[in-house]
Length: 352
Image: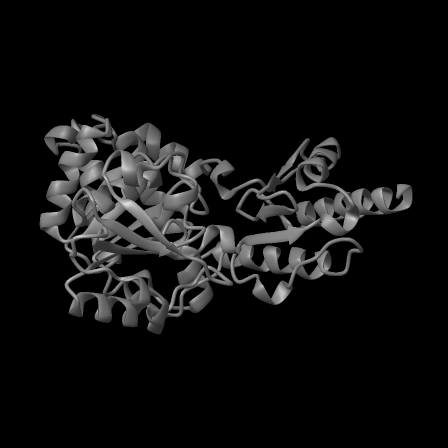
């Protein structure tokens, strides 16, 4: 079999729609979704709400928009949002916390991206004359920049119960929540049972071409629809995209364990390469972050060398590289990537 020109491990956002998604898109029944008349979008939102055991759902163009809307729903300008220090809403969403919601992030550093209630509790601020009060608690599951780590279900439950006792809401950035569900062998409804809103992405491991979903109460989703319009997310005949999304949530969730197995394989093999550092036991889902400083190269230079071998990976710090497995990457592709990493590490060590 002829190898592809590139093995793309930069992200699961590079996944391409499947043949069944393309057929569904071509045959989709459509209407004007801003008028709530697109039957395919309506089916998608009803299906997503049912999967999460929530009252309603809203189809949005991106995960960033879904998170931005959720923060706006639960906060007032001048409040703080408690989140983990490397949370996506802080690191990769262009300060929408401040720009759209008028809020600050109160970040908490953790070893592996997973917040405990004890840590959150210490940072909660009541209304007072000198500081911004807490408006929302946000958790990310799986945690991207911690390497795809997963919240234990019990930890999510405790955070929600304790927050609600203080009349605080909890939003889950569940961009890869289906990866968490696959790894934990539980439903997404169980994971998100007590959160007030949860956003999940359709265009990552589920391989749909575009879109994310925000789920929550009916009142919240009615208000969220207005914020979506304000942000330019009224997509009109969006049933063409929703059709692919319906296939994604119907056909692609069960196979995520294959991506996890490939990520585990990568991690175990990487740990045996001289100059590469990581703990393969920390790889829980489809994200592998490894340190290349032992090779004498920066992460940017190392990834540039890999690109010359036809392997695409992303530097995520001066010394670390991220590899993300997905449905368009096979075990054979992973083996090819490992050969390139070994060659790059060997050549830099030999020239030192």
